[in-house]
Length: 172
Length: 361
Image (cartoon, rainbow over all chains, first blue to last red):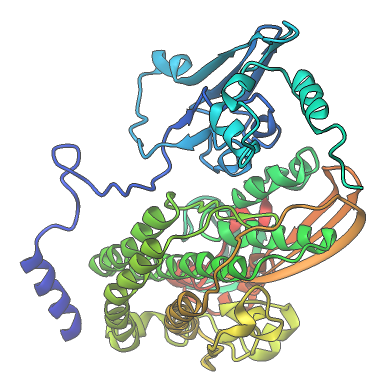
């Protein structure tokens, strides 16, 4: 019993262990998994996140003129599978864990981002403008390619341009 | 039936942990003569649910079987899929998996210790243990971002790498944590209140333990050297130096001491894993899914967890079956409770650290 009295005495001197939250600050590590964020600049609408979302929190709507990715915050289980699978790193989990809300607000708690497609500057077909970061990665080290212009060139036309450029340059 | 023999229903809720098992106890006076168990109150049909989701989704589904050993399920499930796919995980992932597993084991064992203190009527000690456990909860929150379901494993390795800062934080917290658990161990080993309530209670002789096929700390508390981490090493356990803890008392107190001593082995393993961890990728890409069958097992905090999978070439499994240690362990309750006092039933139940939601899934 003596050893326990020692602990009790120490606890008495140290004071309360609990945080004074919400009146004061509480333990909030930066890496805590809170609300989901979708970056419309990067999302290509491939849908791998939707395919692997176990709680069906993600929904992708594909249209002629764009796509919309929606995450229902109340369904999301913060497993971060979408974060891991997203090839563009367009999904992140914010450290914002303040998720208490009124019942009336439950359907408003969504993260929804839309991407509008633009006409291809060559053929005019609607296409998703290619993020500059992706083009920079794809054409890294190619001085003869104007990556800026290719932002508005659809994959089919890009393929054609690449073929034209590389014709006759194939290894013997 | 003599006049002083009666049946006493106990449960289905709040017997020891707040999980449902129904006991129909036949008593003679104050002592228990025999026990019948009825279970199935939290059956959720998870094996069927797994057949309707793809292999990747099932990692998250299996992690939600239970909360205290959640990581063991996603870990073993990932291993069984990797076996079916013939996938070899990167070296760094092997170590990162051990780190997550041991952090969870420490938190799980301490939770059981806390409940035992609570059932002994030692409420302040319960709070003290939970406060110490909070150090590990903070580690989980800081390193993984979640307090219970770490969501660390994926098929082919682990989802995210841990930065040097996070590993340093883990080691720093272990230094704070270890002396506090040392105090807790000393109290469990010497405190009269606890010794009087638990020593010699819920005896499970080694012969019965073998016959009933118990696993984990229940088996090791009866002197059986059974630990998958040692007997058939997986992940990085084969590269780590640790001891298998066994006790020969066969009683609730022995099982307590096994768990407490295991916490120190886990701390040792965590330090080694962080020190030995090689650099490199943390997950390997999934190859195509063949028609295959596979098996994998691992040592969860409560004992051996085994998974079986059959794939049919599609991305949903044709069959997924798992077996958890609590299933055998709670059969042993009928042996442990024989002759025990009614007031001690909750303590005996707690001594096997039952995980009802795992067992009934």
